[in-house]
Length: 271
Ligand SMILES: Nc1ncnc2c1ncn2[C@@H]1O[C@H](COP(=O)(O)OP(=O)(O)OP(=O)(O)O)[C@@H](O)[C@H]1O
Image (cartoon, rainbow, N blue to C red; front, side, top):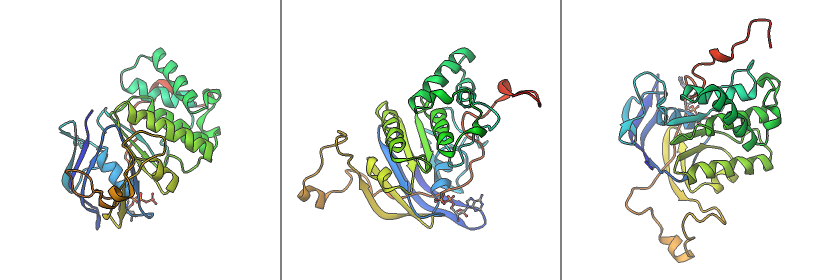
């Protein structure tokens, strides 16, 4: 299990969008990233995942930079994008299968795993439905199935519950927890207080900077650490590290797994 280290990251286009970002995103934990709209959450996820090159500083995972010089993420990184990044004319299962095939899984095995991944999100019955015929919440779950099925070491999810009702939100949080429990770094950008509450750690961004507010969040019933007593809580700071803070956004170039969909392309008049 390896953590993600964000050191001295700044990002600017025509103005600074992120400044002075120092964070450790821990393997085995769910980390929430919150902040107002436009504060930089998506931009930060994009830099963490290697879609964008930081203007200064670096992000490393397992001892190597996540930025590989091309804007293509490392194979260990998977995204669940705010805009889903699905191919509308492909079926739900094809959209998931293509992510597995892009990682070298043989087609028949990829198709089988894609069906299993959709079933995890209770949309197995929609496997053959074209994505453009799905609802927003169903598309969001297809995107989640695609992001989670590849067993990535780093899973970056941008507003993964924005279109979901309470029951499906709980389902998604349970699946994200499973990813953390197998040792992944899981980061969730969110506006939803219930999602923040379900995470182990919380960083907030404001206008491209981490705000002075770092909270380990304890999910009732989840044995992350024993809950501190009120006395301990009043003295609590993260052992051996500076206070953790929030992140910021940008437009991802391309979702991991949507690299090559040529195997699924249909003739112009075929569906
Ligand atoms: N490619 C870009 N070029 C210039 N500015 C950008 C670019 N992408 C994002 N921005 C700006 O960077 C700032 C942060 O955007 P970002 O999408 O990271 O915010 P966010 O916190 O994810 O917002 P939201 O919660 O609305 O998704 C915004 O002011 C946005 O307009």
